[in-house]
Length: 208
Image (tube, rainbow, N blue to C red; front, side):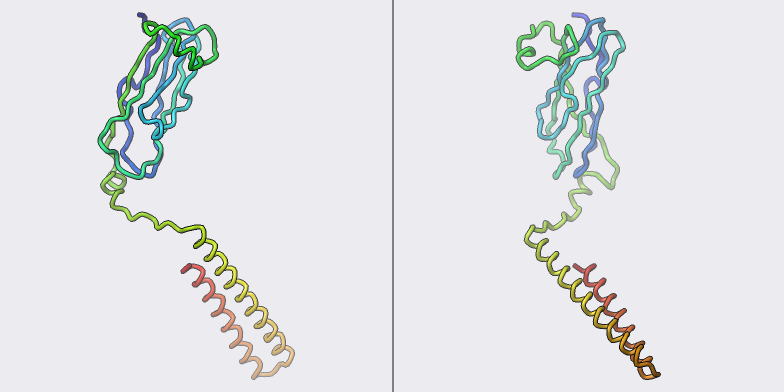
């Protein structure tokens, strides 16, 4: 059977074994015929990879190319040593409309171009290796109720600070109206207290 497509890479899909990060490998499918070629990509691990597009049609003409992105989803544990596999199937087609599942099922198997791939875990930099990442402390989960409580407490602190500031402003205005050296000293003390209150509020908000 004449070669329908040329695929790059042709055997191995190389992914770093990093966790918590998505990675993409692009597969190039080149038409080697003068006819439309329909294709589809399948995997043994559909929950671990997103294939875009998973099926389609390559336009006629040798050298016409499409790209299929295989996106490895973020992992929460290192690879377990098993090999994920992919299968690309291609067949001559009469138009630009992708084949339906029923149409694929009806294709003569002798007319199919099958190409298999395996996932190869390539070395990553030391900072993001599986061993290093597995030793990183995991963030502590916060429940929605805890978030609501912290938010309400923060609102209460903010309101209290606002009220304190209003009270201090009123006292400052009264002292300014009264005048005098003694009131000037009191004014300075009140301003210092105001600044301390604001700083304390900021510090508390950062702690929470």
